[in-house]
Length: 146
Image 1: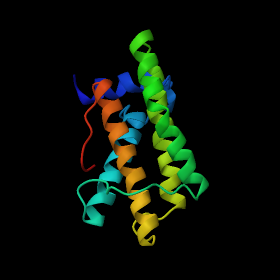
Image 2 (image 1 turned 120 degrees about the horizontal axis):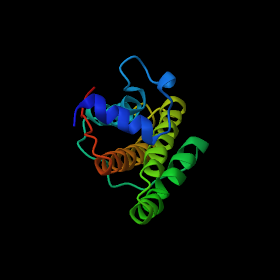
Image 3 (image 1 turned 180 degrees about the vertical axis):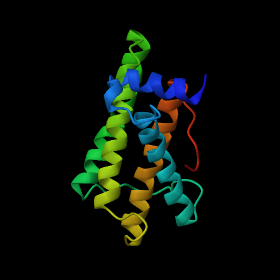
Image 4 (image 1 turned 90 degrees about the vertical axis):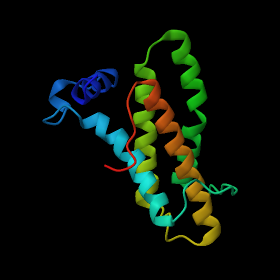
């Protein structure tokens, strides 16, 4: 399946009208892929390959919101497995990417002090894993770089 057909498929799953797509029809698709590649970029700049094994601190509201969104992944996958309504998964992934963007804007990951930095790297790693798995279910590849 071509990139254009996959992006149109995701946009349809997200119930986005043709007028809301960008010129190439890849707006929603690239938002999700961009969130994943942004997280991979954070790990490259941190000099680590995977999320550290550290505890998670949820002191900031953006951290809590992301953690709550991550917890919902299993429920959404279970619902989609029964109903075969993949637009629920696509919508969930879009909400997850938006929630991650809020964390990224409000909470510095790499400039934070060590215990907070490690905690935020764990949240980033979990978010990347969920985005990658969810997009895989939808038949969409996740790039390491955009």
